[in-house]
Length: 249
Image 1 (cartoon, rainbow, N blue to C red):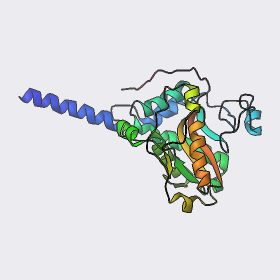
Image 2 (image 1 turned 45 degrees about the vertical axis):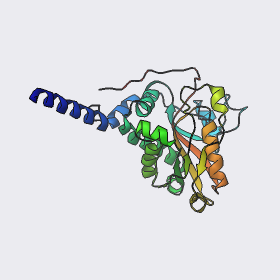
Image 3 (image 1 turned 45 degrees about the horizontal axis):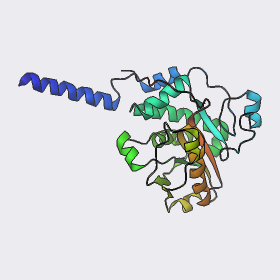
Image 4 (image 1 turned 90 degrees about the vertical axis):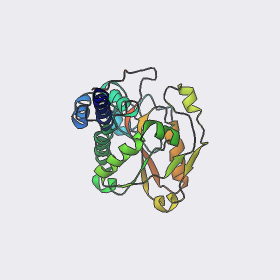
């Protein structure tokens, strides 16, 4: 009986340590190590990697024939290598502690792009997730990233959008993503008062086709936002790329 009780206690401790992240490396140092290379310049219109000259001018060869993603994109890195591993560990591995250091780096990038004076005047809005996905995952990655980014920017963070239903985008084809409709998307009534004439930073973890952020941005603009810019941890560049989930223990 005593041996069974001891085993249950050990299993309970392991479960708690896994949930709070103590059985994993320090999140800040892990993020620093995984993002040490390959962050480079990106196109301000679509978020894909490009040359330094193109990054300044805006618009790259890949997006010249496409419409811009709202008012532009600010990112931490490309959805490849270490950056992709971090995002997948956060979203699918339950390593929620990664959200804070990733959000801080996104906040740094946004402050550098906007300037410290303007960065503290914007409204930071996380991309919404359905209740079902939040319950399954235990948290909304975009919400945690937005919290950390807003603190770094000294800006207002407000949850102004919500989704009553909708399919997850992970694993869907590009055509299926682009076919997404605005069904199930909603804006809170208080949004009009808060957004009137103000600039918004819409925060998400990964930008793929840009369809979902365009839908969200449309709701915010109709609610009174003067402009909507996208801030993401990673931008998908190779549509056929896949990455192994690496979660250290």
